Length: 311
Image (cartoon, rainbow, N blue to C red; front, side, top):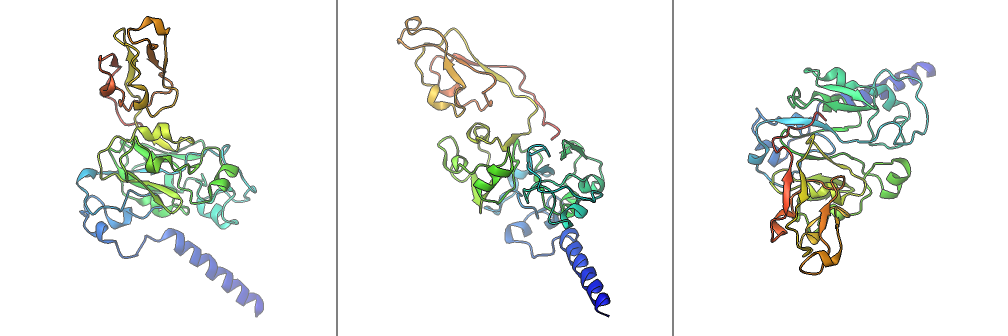
């Protein structure tokens, strides 16, 4: 009789866990969610750990389409494992085995439940993480509802920058278990290159306010861990021509350390300073230096009509 009770209790626990991770979110929608048009952003789609910001109640700047992104950038070789799972059929199997084999509780489990759930076949696995074809993704939210760790979230389809770390762990723990996790340096919250409030703290996580049209590219340079990922496949490059006088006004306008560097000798310029050049490997394409050059010596090189990348 005791064995039967134990078996029923175990079955009940498994059922509760499945209910917890597989059912859609039935919590009442917040006021800002209720105001969104149901045809564009159903409440089901706004239920992930790193969704777009709930600071405002407007949605005009979001456009009429959302796409999914993966809020975990660490491949399986970049985040530590604390054991090897015996069953790997689904992400739910992995989650039920001591909470998953990856030491980070916010990391993708990599079994591909989201791949199976996507009706548009827009998701594949690359390096253990989801790769999303944003041209095929319709923002239906099915991938979000089946992910036991809520690694996926929805952002506006035309958003260029997204947050690739959903961890809410202590920064010291993140550094010890993951090579590319958020280091929580707070630079993204109050840096002079960013409009205040464009990035906010949600506990120990960071959330981007997509309701605003500010330049988000400095985030790529300010984050030492590189968790702010650019969805643009390629950016126009910037170069400095012969009209540079070495005035140095462009230097404080650049958020990327080591991007604008001396090129030449002080005697080569009228003002007695060295001319500069732009390191294309460090440039993030923000263009903040353009307006600061009084001589118009900084020029854009390359195509401007770029497309959003596939992941």
